[in-house]
Image (cartoon, rainbow, N blue to C red; front, side, top):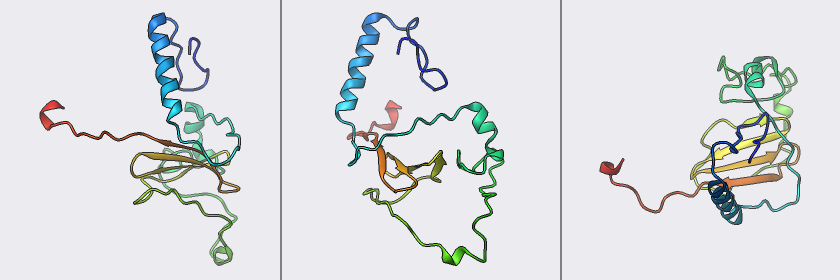
Length: 153
């Protein structure tokens, strides 16, 4: 935390936080980790970095779907040529993945370097190995058990 993680969204905190604040943050992160949902396998999650340059170049990257509309043109069109009208009927599923979450997906799944990222209703996010369908990780943001009155917002 002190130096951040270069090339990611994790900034350096050494000059902004007092030692007691850093310790408090570490304790909070450890508390969150205790409640983390762990996948039912021991697969290692590949390191994936998607920075500004990669997003800006998404149009020229046909092998990944980095954002909602694939690129900033938001055409939601894949330039891949392997699947055509003539052969689409020959496709068969090789795996399926059940989120276990009621309702469904909340947004377009993203595909980055062999990993599919899904966001579902009820604040769940999954990372799935695209080759096997195995869950790499699962995050669930806890919803508030009480709602604030409108006057408190």
